[in-house]
View 1 (cartoon, rainbow, N blue to C red):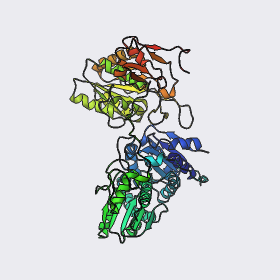
View 2: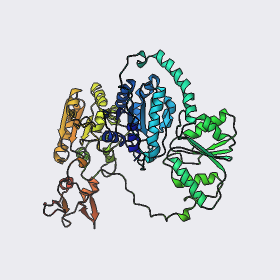
View 3: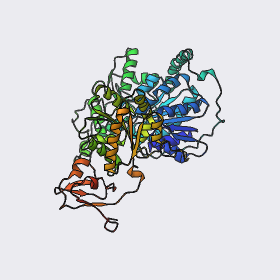
View 4: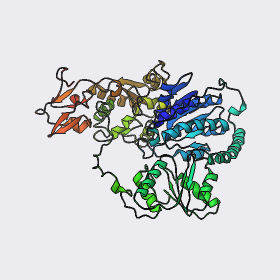
Amino acid sequence: MGNEAIGLGALAAGVRVVTGYPGTPSSEILPTVSARKNGPIHVEWSVNEKVALEVAAGAAMAGARAMVTMKQVGLNVAADPLMSLAYLGVKGGMVVVVADDPGPISSQTEQDTRTFGLFSKLPVFDPASPEEAYEMVIDAFELSERYGTPVLFRPTTRVCHGNAPVALREAVAEAAPARFVKDPRWVIFPKLSYENHVKIEQRLPVIAEEFSGYRFNSLAGRGRLGIVTQGISSGYVAEALAILAESGRPLPAHKLLRVATPHPFPKTLAADFLDGLERVLVVEELDPYLERELQRLAGERHQPVTVLGKGSGHLPLAGENTIAAVTRAIGGFFGFDMPAAAPAGAATQPAAAPPLPARPPVLCAGCSHRNSYLAVKRSMRKRRAIFSGDIGCYTLGNAEPLNMVDTCLCMGAGINMAQGLRVVQPDAVQFAFIGDSTFFHSGITGVINAVYNRTPIVVVVLDNSTTAMTGLQPHPGTGDTMMGDIAPKIDIATVLRGIGVQHVEKCDPMQLEEAEAAVVRAVDATAHGVAALIFESPCIHVCPAGPQYVVDADACQCKECIIKLGCPAILSVDGKAWIDNSLCHGCDLCLQVCRFDAIHRLSPAEAAP
């Protein structure tokens, strides 16, 4: 897997400290290092991306090689220390792996880390495959150490989760034990920042020149037409060219430039590419980054070349590239008469499969978040309430029939948005839902703000004892670490009381009536300020399944279990509810909401094996 290749590449490069915060599509990198490390390598899931970057920065300032992992929106959280670290620099190599997510497939945004590299003035590596990711991360460490700067490493989802055979190297031995040497260079002051800014601007052209000869940047072909690509899109381009060649039409002569190091832009290589060209098509994902760089370079050289791509409408502005879209774009660029909805050569391709039925993401069968939402919803039937959500599995509570997430912006924002909503709409009860991992990530400061400003909101912590959405990683409340240590469990209720929340109550959401009563008590307590309710029930993926259930079709009348719950294990068959026990986790929520006693628990003897 690409993520495994990145982790193994870091080990081969002699990494000493690896930190991160889980976020798809980056999550498998750090566990790979943890599982395959051999020697004194520190690995940790940090509280958030800012903390992770600062821990790694400390190690890199002492001379150790360090790596940080996160997804693209995590870089926003880490931006503050990263921008300053770009000015201070590092002693040991430091690679910041930021996995971008075109689509987006599992993210809030499609932001492009190449553009962040331009903003932060940091070098960027952009691998196209797991094999390249392995080799390139080793190169990234070496360049980082040589220039004393952090380096951004930007795989995208299809590289992170693609698979390929990778030839592994022997790990590099640590040259000497890392030791921190006291020096004024590590303390950022305006004068030092000015001086280092000058040095950064001076070294960027030097790195750009080095990148022009970098082994994973390539220039091939000849002609008056040119195609430029990067990352996984280079694979799409190769396949598109093969499809067009197989269609029987001769391809016009063309140059092909692949850019693996988008920043600083390899101008010398790009200038060689542009020489003699009349038109260029840029095939890339996310921002039209290479397109703009080529237009800028052509302008600087007063070269009359037309650069086409996303900005010109020749490729989609958003979403992932596909072979079909890239084939149409290249075929049109070559002057071929292309079909509107299928790639050239489609006759040689397998017949299109029928469209799959829509399958929107839903909470798992048996998920305790469903119970938590239902308890709040039922308790607020006669009250006006606004439900601010957050990032995690529980975001899926936005869908019908629960419809319990009115806002969702970014990690930790729900608690703060509830405060703003309370100011402008004081007649509504303001709920803020947040998960246990997200509470530690960025929820605590929001609660402090609400307590300090005496803003009456109900903070609902959905504690399922793991970081579920990204792969069941531990966090400060689970009692274990990536180093295999038993750690002190940080109790969320104790934290809340310690920062001044007067009403803090724990409750099991699987007991619906008790949970509803707890919600009412929390709402009543907002008369005195912030109230907190902690719904504690483990994720179904970290606890065994419960008993199985069956529906008595003759007694089934209300179908409230279908209408109100939205559980994927409960279906409507012949107008009656039916439970698919291959999906059911045995939470018994349906049993609690059934008004006609039509759902019955099976005995162990009756249950399917």
